[in-house]
Image (cartoon, rainbow, N blue to C red; front, side):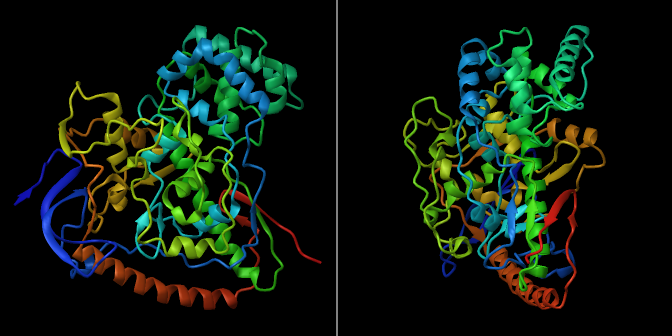
Length: 492
């Protein structure tokens, strides 16, 4: 039996499968794969995709620290949210930001070792995390569920054309000039100006603050004019797809952290270098992603109240004392939770794309918005961020969506410019069917995938050994890494 639904993101075919947890027993069964998968034989080496880059660096103690870009919500911020919520909650829901605003009131305690442990295994070529046992990554599904961001809607606006809205933008700019110093206006001064002020533009000022502090904190805690068009659209309830832009920023920052780890390894042995790295994304989502999936981290979740966002499970939760993060990540083959959101959670309703019975659903105007959102989570695409584009490859981590894993095929990118990338992301691809996997289904991998993976690991282990020998012979200091500044302090 073999069935390929041409206008679907999922391919169904009979295949020789094996469990990722027990590779001693094979079974021939109907399997479900995210497209594209490798269409040629694994023995055809010229067509074999490049194996993912395994973590090649990482001293036991990393001479790296995140700068102060990890921002916690203040008591005043929570008060401001509560003050405006009764009046504007409906608008926040229309704009797809209601849960994201609630998440911004939570305190996710920073665990730098865990963030660096994930970044150490980041592969910039695939935008995935490479463990010894499989690939995984932060997906649009995670950004939707943990961050509360929409994957549907319009692209992030760069300008305002409507006269009435342009007037609001000018009022925001004038306020910024009035209260700012030397052309800059800090977030604190901005909040003091508008919080509970009753100003006609308080709502737009509130959303500007939220974007600058929690969504795209790219401006070193100052208000930037470029944020005003987005805040004005959101204040009107316009649905904006913040999810892909947020995920792109996380991918970019994980790349920066990986590069910093590589650079730090060069000088770690003699202890001369300490690197301080700026990140400009809601990197706390990476930490919550890990809490959800690695039970050996011993992060004890809260019991949440009805109506709370999923992220409230991790509000004020501290990681238990763990001696060796790397060991936990490397040994999680049998305990990794591929679909943590499929497990029952008190007071948290299942999304509609979690079902006991697998289904093929028609993609048409009757498809519910929540299910249509899930379609975007399954699509390979290019994510348009703030001045950058990142590749999204869910077919490399199909088990995170309850499906089987085969060798991933090559994706032709549409990233010539942001306009083309966005059109490819948001436009119709003529899908006629959406496959929803059963939340009870136990995913597996193809026998050829397991062979490919083991070959990849073997090759990369040899490459890692060569790199480490080369690092020991290198004495140059890293003073700047990509787009991020790295501060070096010499120990006396």
